Image (tube, rainbow, N blue to C red; front, side, top):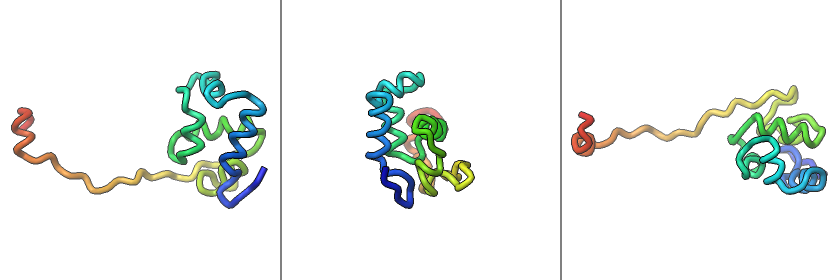
Length: 102
């Protein structure tokens, strides 16, 4: 498997999981997750730490080895992930009155 600064290449993770356990959908279902849970974690770092840990266990590697510094520290603790939020806007008063909420 190729290693890069951010861990193992996603395509290599997919390939190894498929070789060992079959389609990603079946892996997700065996964990009792939604059909696309494994795929979602591969594509989105903020999706599910629990599923990231499961993927690392399936591969027999540490979370840091699999996901790299963008998701885990060298001691395999998750990197804090603050949500990216823009400023919150108020609903216009006119619309609030229409709904009877004001």
